Image 1 (tube, rainbow, N blue to C red):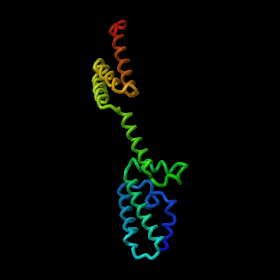
Image 2 (image 1 turned 30 degrees about the vertical axis):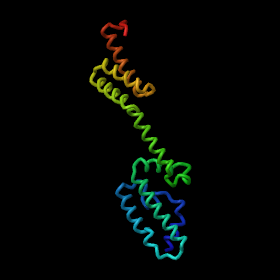
Image 3 (image 1 turned 90 degrees about the vertical axis):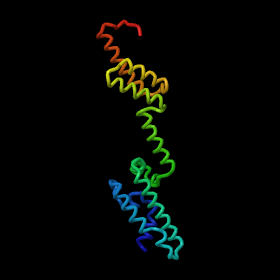
Image 4 (image 1 turned 90 degrees about the horizontal axis):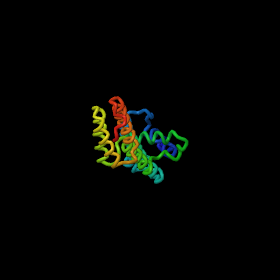
Length: 184
């Protein structure tokens, strides 16, 4: 009981790794084992007989925190975000993974995907076709498809960079053939 009381008292200063008693380098299997161990040990049904109402509430809070820790640490993206948050200077404010943190994580992963491929489905389709054409050496077709991709997403820097690469190759080929003054 003394260990339970002491652990409940320190709960507000503990991060999720400390709650589950695992290292920051723990594997998903280790996290799962720790969750099952801790949830069995601190399940509120085991402490229904306690007379101390405050301690009962703290056990419930501990159990909630164990569950919360498991759901954050088992997800790779949330775990990365959480580890970065608690490693920073604002550790005390970031011990709990909140809804806003989750929204930030989702927005960051969405931005990362959009930066890689693009937002508009047609723009992505034309970009992928243009990139495939460029890889196959069909430069004129690649240029057309990349220009079409840019009509759907004119601000996409990845599309612009790929188009610039293709146009540079087209200009070099034109110079080699002696068509440097050809009007396009």
